[in-house]
Image (tube, rainbow, N blue to C red; front, side, top):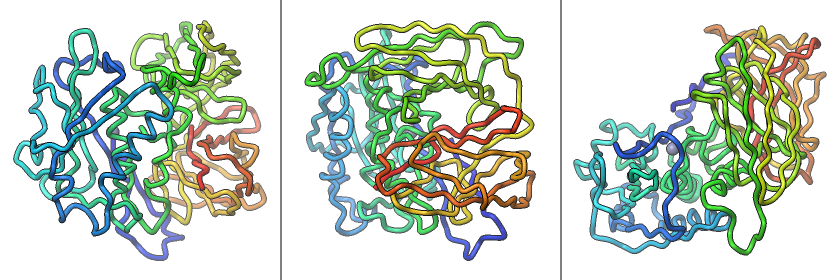
Length: 422
Ligand SMILES: [Zn+2]
């Protein structure tokens, strides 16, 4: 997935070489379309020496081993997985096919096999992970290739990828996760390059509540956390319009997005790995930013399954949300906001009108000042609204959604568009 980045002409002070970039995973021929896991919770990977010897891909001073250990620790801290690694002379990812060589490799070596995964000289994709699975759906091998054309760092340097953030994302693929629709999640498909305009991807090293439930749905919580999780099975009853492409997500009592998935076909969704509690069920009928509908509340208990049936009734709004940004930049990536900060935020989409819409967030710690609303004319059929947004100094970290609502009640939502992070 590639995000669309636009600049607001009225606000552009300078044009920087910044954009949101993508990470792609591709499945080997033997794998199934749904999320798979490894049979064992102990996974070992070989790390090509190219990661430690390539001087042209890492900014001087980059601590590759620490970045990898930190990336592993993010997942091990929240799920019952254990990832170990050993150095290896091997350089090539396994070619696409029904099965690989059985050894998972992390590499950045510029071999012909690895370079074939990227366009020559193109740095818009940070890495690719090729996942192999057996007929039972278990992952048997996952090879991570960091783009040999790209530059990585661990200090936020301009126009480099944050190594720890990229590795955290790719390890999520290795563990069996697919891309998330939730903007503030590590597993969202946008992997941003560090830039001076807007926040880079570095902040998305921290797993969102949605990342955590997704990985726990596959592996459970760490054993020390007893009785962590419950599951919600949601069945959407027949509607006149197809539900394909709809995004269904759960918000916890603090407004954080706890789970989310897009409906490809069928009408049944299962969210595992959920912490006990009460959740609001929300659907966006045609994906992120489109007509939203509150479907009610469900309650999850540890160790049990909650069944929830509901019929969506809504149709569509005369407007859609698509982009968010600060300082004049609009993109499909979440925006990082610091506790205690006040920011000039812009949301963009189709048919937005500041005089008719209420705009609010799902966090009581993040406030939008409605007296500052202004419409911004935008080319190419994109309308935008700019406003001031403030984050309480004691706001907890997490990803929260932005809502835009008409006086008649119809709303659209960008799930997880605000990542509050220190
Ligand atoms: Zn990815």
